[in-house]
Image (tube, rainbow, N blue to C red; front, side, top):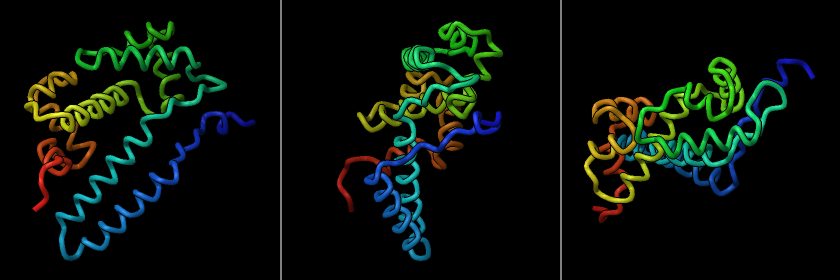
Length: 179
């Protein structure tokens, strides 16, 4: 095995039901693109949300060389999920894995395919989506509960990652009556 093949990770596989739902959403978006851009945006947003949720759930496979091992992955993920509402430093995550800061950062990126703080932000946004779907709490409260400094900070990260504001996402995914 070459060093390059060790570092390359397979993309997560999607279950057939998720793949079929994604294909339908993308087809709907393409069909609505010329006539109804808002409907196309809605379909694309749902597809993005579905894809994000589908790829977040499985635990990454422990790496053979240079990545985190199973117990480290579980400890770090549990630590992040337990502290989403506070400031999380990479050195705290490294301490959970019993690694130096530089070794942890490198191993984390090999294991998860993204830097530690990008992963934390993604988890915070996923938690925010869960809270928005669960009720009608103010976005400023949700931002605080998910560890963002304030609502504009939350909105900036949300828009960058999901392509729309949290308020628009909430409206799009609300369970209210359809006109």
